Every structure is written in structure tokens, then in C-alpha cells.
Image (cartoon, rainbow, N blue to C red; front, side):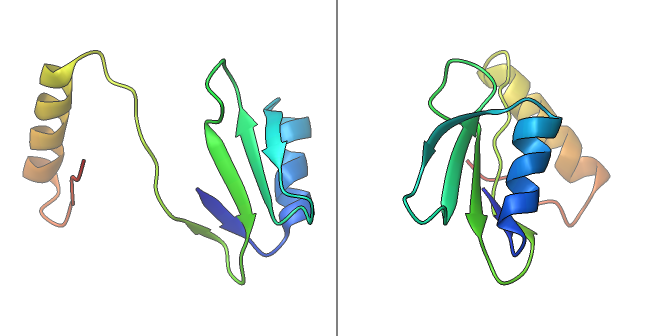
Length: 84
């Protein structure tokens, strides 16, 4: 989820610039669900007072890859928080 005070410009960057397709959009254009594959959405862009990245997810090969990557991240960066 990506928040932006410049919603039109942000939508244009992802849709026109990077090729994301709109899955859904609220009537007031407060939020746009975008995708780059067959999933309903890979990105939600919503209007916000300041730009921010709320959360993100990564696709991994299997559960073992998740454990190895999370362990490596916390070992290399003590301040890393691995959740989910």
C-alpha cells in the first residue's frame, strides 16, 4: 500500500510509466488498485497527507526460502523486523 499526496501524478507514474493496469478505483479516485499480473492487485495507491509505504509482501519459492531470508535479514540488520 502506497500513500501519496499527489495521487494523480503517482497513478500516472505507475500506470503510464511502469505499465500497471487498473483493477478497481474508488468513485472519488481516493484509491486505485493496480496489477501487473492476474492477481486482483499488486499495488494499492491511496490519497494521503504525506507519502508513505504502509506495507509490502514478497513472493517466495517456498516456506524454507522465507525462513532463510528472514534469518539472514535479522542477522545482518539488528533493527530489521520480519513479520508474517
